[in-house]
Amino acid sequence: MINTGLGQKVVLVTGGSGGIGEAISRAFAAQGARVAVHHHPGEEARWAHVTPPVEAARRLAGELDDAVAVAADLAEPDAAARLFDEVEARLGPVDVLVNNAAHCETPDTVDALTAGSLERHYRVNAIAPALLISELACRQQPDRAAPCVVNISTDAARAFPGQLGYGSSKAALEGLTRGTALDLGAAGIRVNAVAPGPVQTGWMDEDLVAKVKEIVPLGRPGKPDDIADAVVFLASEQARWITGQVLQVAGGHAL
Image 1 (cartoon, rainbow, N blue to C red):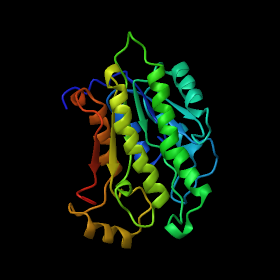
Image 2: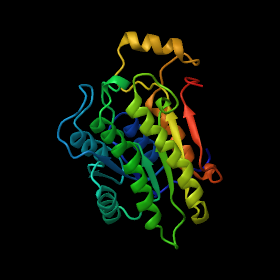
Image 3: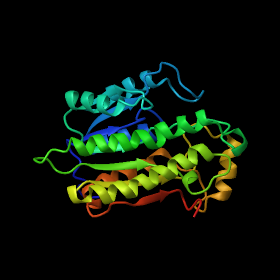
Image 4: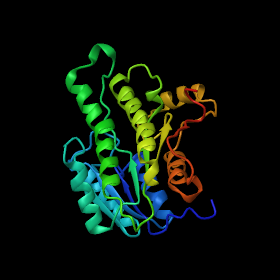
């Protein structure tokens, strides 16, 4: 890409402090964007291989030029408005919203589903992105270029045994991508999604990596940068006539 058109754009990346989110935050910063690195306000990491979110977000924001760490529990109904208020106060109006934050819990098989687990999945993976997109659209300013949205889905939205709450909530996110793209197109707001395959962010051991190599046509697990590059493309000037699409970035997995 010769010029992404992202210099000085304000980018809000939810769940932006680790794994794929960190790679996305870094990729936008490399394009000269001003990045709001969102993180959960909890002090403890949910997984052993993950740095606590507050610590990770502050460290990352300190490493990037013109970046800030912003906290919000996206399961809370008023999180979207409060998050936008803080980003606008610290960086300015949001130009790019990346809905990357996700809730995933195990077991997530059909015999383990509960109303509580489904609600937790849907609150973060579908409801929060919908409210954030609505907030972005309501705050659109006529004297600024139209903002855009990139949602992060997953292969599990198509079919993935043992991830029913997670996968179905991400399928809802893909439906939201298409619906909001249609509703917001007249305002110039583009909405797309990236659906990653199995990406190594520290959770795969050697045996699982070997299994992934066997089932991915391109012969390797994904890297966070593989996803980040696709997100930057969809937010860039080069994708100016693309909306309502779900781009599978998975090395051919789950075709």
